[in-house]
Amino acid sequence: MARSEKSENKNRVLGLDIGNGYGYVSLLENPKNDPIPLLPASLSTQGMPTTAYVKPPNGEQIDVFSDGRAAEQKYARTPQQLVYAAKTRLPELTLKIPGIERPVQAGHIYAAAAHDLLVLAEKELANKGIPPVYDVVFTFPAAFADNVPVLEIMQENLGKVEINGKPIQVLSRLPEPAAVAIDYLHYMQHIAPEQIRIKKNEFTVLVYDLGHGTFDTAIVTAQSEGTPYKMHAKDGLEEVGGKDFDNVLYQELLSVLQKQYGFEPQNEIQRAEIMREAVKAKIALTDDNSYLASVMNQQNEYCEVEITRERFEKLSEPLVFQTLEVVQKMLEEAEEKGITIDAIVLSGGGSKVPMIRASLEKLVEDKYPIIMHRPSEAVSFGASRFAGASRFGYGDGVAHKEDAEEESENKEIETEEKKPVTEEEDDNVKNTNPVLEQQTDRCYGIWYPSAGKLEGEIRFLVTSGQTRPFRSEPISFVSQSSRIVIKVFQSKEKNQVLETDAEHNCDGIVWIPFHVKKGTKYNLTLTAQENYGVQVDIHSDNGEHYTKSTTDEWKKLTDE
Image (cartoon, rainbow, N blue to C red; front, side, top):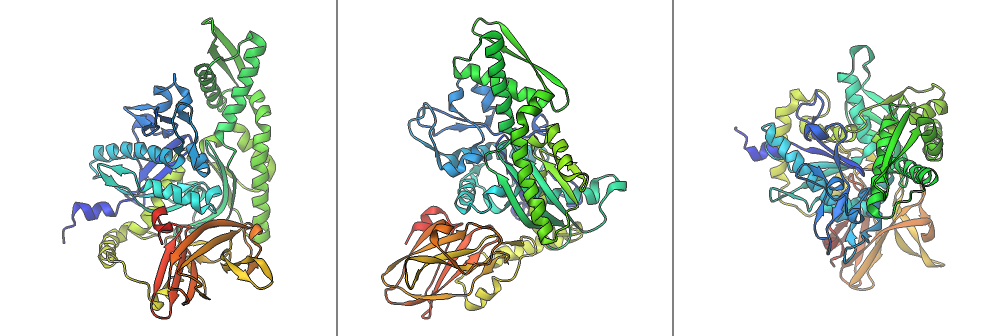
């Protein structure tokens, strides 16, 4: 049977890495080879800049990259409306930007970066004779993994992006360190020089991912057979990233310019020029021992400042030390759990700073090899390979490509009509998906009244260490009115097995309203989903069934 162009495209999935400084997108066409970067040659080394310009007066237009130029270049003379590291600011929900009439949703800025990145990808696909691809898997910082509302903001806004008038379909998401581990394992098994290739089918790494806006670390086992990865532990610093190393040099330049030349910037344009020199200095000091920064003062005279690598490393010590503390904690956790780490893998543009590797070597004292692995591409490549696992079948892949496409088409037909969940299907949710298997590292539960406790308590239905998707055993309640609100919480601490806890010891995720029948007995279950959502199911004995998930769009989630 001849396949339509549409069905073939449905089997293609893009790996999307929208970083705080740069974005990268790729497509896995052949599982035996590297994914294909979908960026023009001029951007293929670092990626597409993701600094956004929010256009006055109402902020409805957001420009990230267009006409071959980055927003930071095009709007250098109006830097007040430039937004840096937008991903780290997603938890703020809305941003107040000078010159903009009202706050702008952080998710809209994130979506604008995704849009411009996908426009570049669509052009590259056309250049390669590949039809447009509208399905994506996106990545997120490990530090966001337990922040379900932020993950939903990311996914919901990506789902609103349109290319060629067609909406993007988000198929899945995965933590950035997991993507790095997946890409590294395949590289070391199949692409690296023969003499250093990994022969075994799994490899456990501690990923040190210093991006532009955040620092992520995780212990991940990547596997070439069965589940693509298992993340044993994760941690990170949402407020430490490559931008903070830029700021260290920026502050140094301000200090030296004032002392040597009596020069202080008087406006945003001059401050932006000094920041550009700081970024150039950081990049240069990766390979060179010194950099000569040059800034023009108010008299149109050039002021030159020499910055040495030694000085940069001295200024950056507090930042590096913060990341090393997290790494040390992860190594101790691995030892406690009996996990053997095969290597430490460096990723993210910030990891190129030489003192990062040197400091890690001192910390681990040659116990583990430390490898720099594709700092710009690894996250996107890993996401592409993760997406391709379901397309090709994980393992030898190519031999099963045709079968996988047929199976994909059949499944699409079978699941086109969404059916109510039956009791038999309730049991099936506990079966694991061989492509997406992940484990909970926190407990999930609901607020529940408690005898002798006026404030009630959080009753946990899903404990840590459960393989997603995992559905809890049901608990029963009788509705006291026609409107009920289920308050969903998660434990603050990781890797615990709890039955109950006080509300102040837990983090609230979301309150979900339902319209039900008053005075009716219902059974409630929670499901920890593969995409890090939490699903609430309510059943009655007479066949009523209500389902809502934290992955639902906000309107559906709050609709009674």
